[in-house]
Length: 382
Image 1: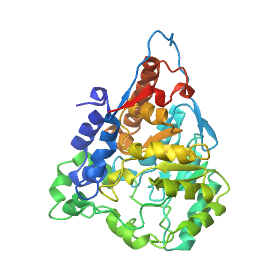
Image 2: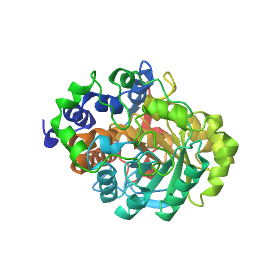
Image 3: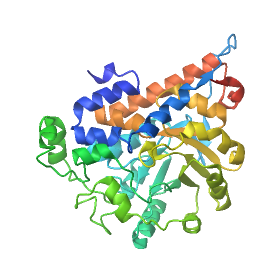
């Protein structure tokens, strides 16, 4: 199977599975407990039908929108995700370049494998920095200062990770950051020599945005669940979130909102955007899917903040359904991580191009010349 054989996100997933050691693949692919929510995130879209419209003369469509104060070319962007150097040696650099070329936002995690200064200088495209609040307040301030100096457009405070989810696939494989090679998992790394040579022979793995304050996750191996539980501040509350919002003088997003009450509180503390997200099903299993939560949240705060649907997005039609409900944009992580693992920057670029084409095709078949033409009148729920 080659990159040119990848025509959808499931194809990229299959190619990534062939190229990655199984502990690394299962880190991307897995979720919490029985992975009910991980499946639910995607299945939620199947319970809603689109209604096509015909004879509308659709030679061109306009899918531009504004997000975090920047115009973007499409209503889909790449969510911040951690540890990208482990999936492909190009890591965040590939994702940043592909997003900029597509005219959309790239998210960069606190647990990124390149520094914020380099990320900021790499492209002129819009960028979102995702903040995990650590016990070390000096580290939190240093990351916000670095994002400001690097001219990031917005900050997203992740609010659903005060403890790590029970990611049983990672427990079985022994996956850590950086990788800890054990008798149990050594063979899985050994039979993927391409991955191993790139990991060993290219630049040393690190988490540079953390390295000046903590060694865990960068030079001292930790599972991601253990890192969240031990290193992140479990006392994070609304008062603290508001204080962080005041430390940042640009667009400010809360990532991990699924309750209407929390969406209203986000508005109260001055958030300009919310990402309706359950962390890809990796935290609380059995929780509501973002698409299922979307309508109530849009009705409550959609005229006050930018509402982003994050989770389960694998098709352009998923984006159109979320926008028809009232989301300003959509985002996803796995949708490009599979492509990154499959083929680096070329893989991410192809995945984004395919999804953009699906959105454009869907808009033409629905008779929508612009995103403003999408509404709940386009939808029927089963």
